[in-house]
Length: 135
Image 1 (cartoon, rainbow, N blue to C red):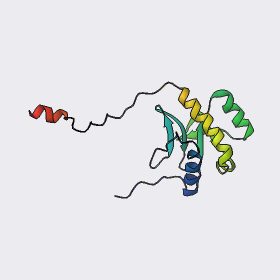
Image 2: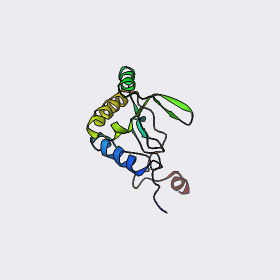
Image 3: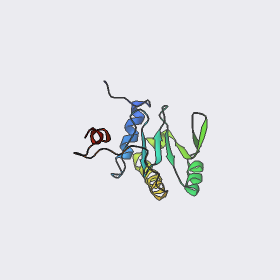
Image 4: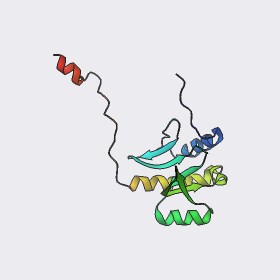
């Protein structure tokens, strides 16, 4: 079965991965909808149309919106109140964008961790519930 590919344009995915690579602690997630998160808090995402959205704290968010003449991100008809739309020109400027991404990452690290919804992986050699019942 072929590996899923992002719905965003390939050039946007390449630019997104390039800026993520500037901060080694950040790992890109999401096969078809690329995003980053820390402690269960998402702080960046690449929309299907190739727009990068970054989560920023309030004062910096307002300053970013004015400085870059952009607006809050909207997905599926819902405004994402903490996420700004990154203009294409800034997405292409890895050096400048990495500073904003670092700010977004620090903000996400400061948020309360969300509990995981994934089931824990079985430890090697651990017996599964069905194996325990079989005895």
